[in-house]
Length: 217
Image (cartoon, rainbow, N blue to C red):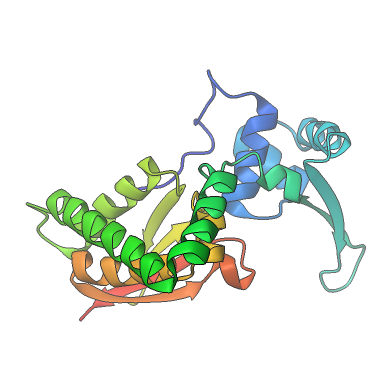
């Protein structure tokens, strides 16, 4: 199974602070004790790092009530923290898309989306050559999307389906301006995986991540 290995990733190239930011990005809000356990350090050490990150405006602590007892303190990424995970050339992309729409009209935007969709479909299909089953196709797609900056991972579900999760969207700014990019991706996933694909979580709808349930047709 393809997963992001938070315990070992970046031990030599990432600081503890960067690994904590990655943990929040890929796993959502965390208690310091849980974060410390995942990263192989103590909860207090993780808490101290979170406090430093909070002073930089990258994380914030939110109290959450969980049944009886004292509220727990969960650390969240702030907007500035999320910005540490780049939206590829976002400002330029948005400016170009708006210029195309204003000067050439909506049809030109549709042409751009269609062209990108066709090129992506060809590349993804080539990557699936030789894959013998749905699990292997999902694993290959996950690897492709991770290389493209989506911080993707997958896992098998008890009912035989698969869950594909993308913890980051490097084209989020473009997709916000033109949601056709998201519709195109869903169509491509369905075709290259030869499976039924349903989006269950969507960053543009306010979710922390995009998630897709994948099952046999």
